[in-house]
Amino acid sequence: MDATLQKHGAKHIYKVPEGLRELCTDITREVLRSQPKEMYSFIADYIDLLLITRENAKVAVKIITNILKGTHTIMNILCQTGLTIEQIAAAAPRIQA
Image 1 (cartoon, rainbow, N blue to C red):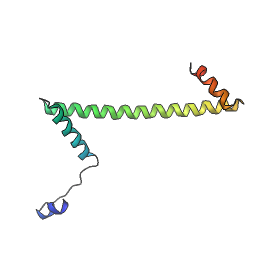
Image 2 (cartoon, one colour):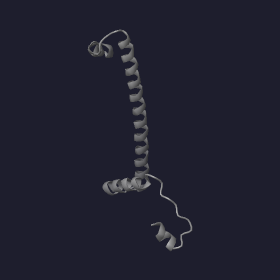
Image 3 (cartoon, rainbow, N blue to C red):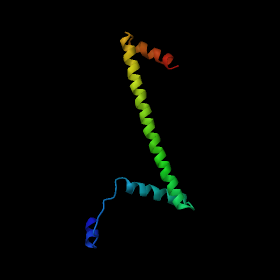
Image 4 (cartoon, one colour):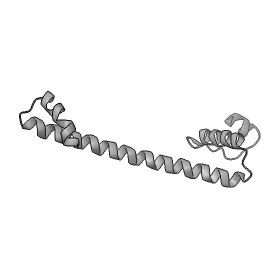
């Protein structure tokens, strides 16, 4: 494609940012599927929803990471008490409650 642009005298050739093609494809699919009357509002709402979803995913990853860190800490503390893994597993439901 770059050669085609150069052939036609394009002075500047810019690379498409990573993910932009996929985003455009997704937006096009959703617009065609939904046939919104207010296309610009629809696209803005769609992008807002994507951003919210991405932020929620980041928060979920942080929460899970913290839970796993906490789990390892608790397991280390319980192992230091001399309990076996089986005893720890049996005690876990009571600790969680």
